[in-house]
Amino acid sequence: MKKISIIAAILLPLLPATVRLAEARPVTDDMGIVQQDDAKMKWFEDAKFGMFLHWGIYSVPAKGEWFMENKKMSPAEYAKFATDQGDGVYFDAKDFNPAEWAKIAKDSGIKYMCLTSRHHDGFALFDSKHPNAFTSVQTIHRDLYAEYVKACRAEGLRVGLYFSPIDWRYPGYYDVTGTNCVPNKWHYQTNPAHKENARVMKEEVYEQVRTLFRNYGPFDYFFWDGAWLGQQGTDRDGAFFWEPGKYRDPANAWPVGKEYSDQDETGRDLGLMGIVRKYSPDIVCNRRSGWIGDIKDEEGGKLVTGPVRSDYWEKCLNLNKPSWGYNDRQNLMTYDEIVRYLVDVVMRNGNMLLNFGPDRHGKIPESHAALTRRVGAWLAKVGDSIYGTRGGPWNPVDGQYGFTCKPGKYFVHLLPDYAGTEFTTPVIPGKVTGCRDLFTGEELAHTVAADGSLHITGLNRTAHPADTVVMITTQDAAK
Ligand code: GLC
Image (cartoon, rainbow, N blue to C red; front, top):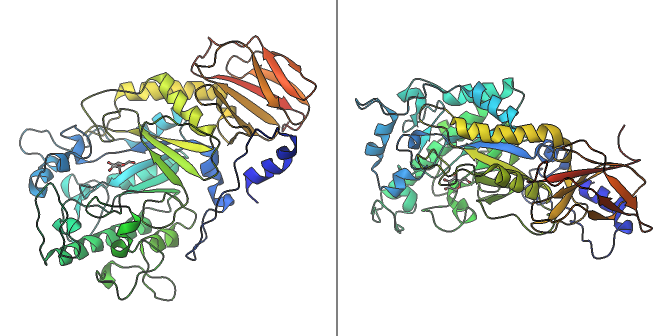
């Protein structure tokens, strides 16, 4: 049974009719692969906070990961960022020490990491043997991805993978049928040869996904990005081409050669998610492959509002707002903003995947690390109200407050816009045995009303204004 429905079964009769609880989560296993089972999702739901990392040769021009497209650069011109052109300014990764990244993550209270293995420019940080592959092994003789995976594991962090099927190096990406080229920055025109070009692009994706899962896995988490075609429509619209499901269709018009394919135990050719789940059956995967996945992603800095959500979900956003990839323009989230987003997400049953953009040397800027380490220091005190909790059981009030809970514990999160030093909770199920400020550790004066709601007074709103966390324990709390 779903955790949320257990909580619902216990609490529902006790709650006022006005308090709506999240419904049970949907199970959308319509294509033969078990997913969204709670046991598999538990670590993810408990973890709450992940580190996203966009790192590639776009860190050289330092204007974000869409640089190649924004500047309409030819693949040959763009590729120069990968090697020394005589001025020493290239993707040298000389300070890349993934153990340091993992340490920043741990100090920041982050539980899983997710590094781009290749972005839309097609540059891979791993060792791919496809003839068209463009990799760090070729340019700087380093398998950066192997180093990253090893470091995450050594630090006991969950290991996540990001992969983009989009590849701007192939004109066929904009014209997969060879009959209908969509508008693009490079002014490629419709050309029958594009169909074969697109097929080779697909083959490279199959070889690379297979390589990552065979040689670097198992992975805990997967962020697919951009299975759309020609940057038009949806990921689902591109599914006829990529074949992101469990199996491929032998009659598909863009066949993948045997040497780049993977099969199930009966010899049947696997589609992209078929390969993923063959090697990492328990992986938690987003829904951007063009096929079903486990979690819904919400991208960008829009404020998180509304009731507790019933679906598995994750908010990804940028610590340095201008772009995902390294940018010499610095406009960092503030400490209060990071806390606000994290709490807003967790109160609504989600996770936050906070993005870092290391520079061309592989360094996470000091100022970025210092900021999230502060968040980690706060989490070291109030982590009980975040990790392993579920949102609710009562719906939050946007911008004011919300709740998290775990057996026998209820946490009230008061945001800066909530005014005052008193708070009245909804009806607390069970006998209240304690009430304190989790950050300061101070006991809080409270009275229990006849209906079982708790009136708390003397709240300290200045010790940590970004979020005042009150922990209410009941006799059901684990000893
Ligand atoms: C978008 C962007 C991409 C970024 C991603 C992160 O799809 O194209 O640059 O990697 O979002 O969610």
